[in-house]
Each structure stands twice: as C-alpha cells, then as structure tokens.
Length: 217
View 1: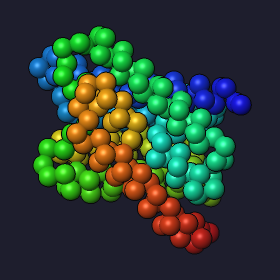
View 2: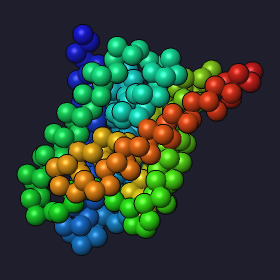
View 3: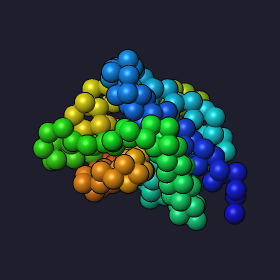
C-alpha cells in the first residue's frame, strides 16, 4: 500500500472542494463579492496548484471519473482504483464538512444543480468532462514535449469551462466534487446527474485520444 499516493489524492481533492465550493459559499454569504468570474478563476487556479503540488506523488487525479478513465486507458493501475476513489471521497467530505461547520446557515454548500432542464445540464457535463479528460490524456499521456505544462492547461480548461457553463449546470466535471456537498447539505435530488455525466464524458474521451496518438509524428 502506497500511503503517500493516497494521502496526496486526499489532500488535493480536499483543496479543490474546499477552495472551489468555498468560493461559491462565500460569494453567496457576501452578496456576490467574489462573482462568477472569481469562482471560475478559483476553481481553475486551485486545480492547477494541486496538480503541481501532488502530481509527482499521485498523478493528481482528484476525480473518480479521471481515475476510471485512466485505468480503462491502461495508463493507471487498477490496484489503485478503489484506494484512489476512497481517498478522493474522504478529502471531499472533509472539505464539505468543514465548510458546513464554518458556514452553518448556507443551504447548498456549493452543491451543483441544473438551472434549466436536467437533460441540458447532463449533456453539458458530458461535453465538459469529455474535453477535460481529452486535455489530460493529450497533455500527460501522449508523446508531448509540453507535458510539464499539464497543470497549467488542465487548470485553464477547468477555468474556461466553469466560466461559460457554470451558471447553467455548475460545471462540476467531477463526481466527488458534487457528491460531497450534495450529501452534506441534503440536496441530493440531482446527484445521479453529476455522477453519470462526468463518468460518461471521461470514458467517451478515450477512443478519440487513442485515434489521435496513433497519428502522432
């Protein structure tokens, strides 16, 4: 058992959920002082920071959909699958629990909820996760001389997608980022959407990545 890897996944996921959903909560508590732009920037920057902090230790998944897609792509060991998922879940729930303690009057705690019809947010989440996963695979697991910039590019993808799609679907792209605040806040009515859509999008990215790397020169 590689304790440092699992601890890195726990800490990285904690950081993302704490800072990301925390920015949503604080924005609500302070009547919009952070703004939607600030929330998107917070998510992008914390993802980038956690990748550079812990990428050398755990590979910086911080996302069950990413872990599953990498295992299916044979770019990660299946023996790490359950420990990684458990580590990510512990980190996310610790973050949401702490935010509940800090802001007990906040109703949603950063829970992702669709603004329009469920199918609209479902399709958006599938597409957002699809391009996030494709970016991860192309930057970190291809013949890419710019692999050192993976954290920057992945952070920019998260920032950009959160910026334009966040007001409609929440731009989760990460099942555990949505599961933890939903369960801690008690708003679980759409939890199925934010589990199924990111997993679907991440898995769907694999065939195109394989096609693209076959034609690398």
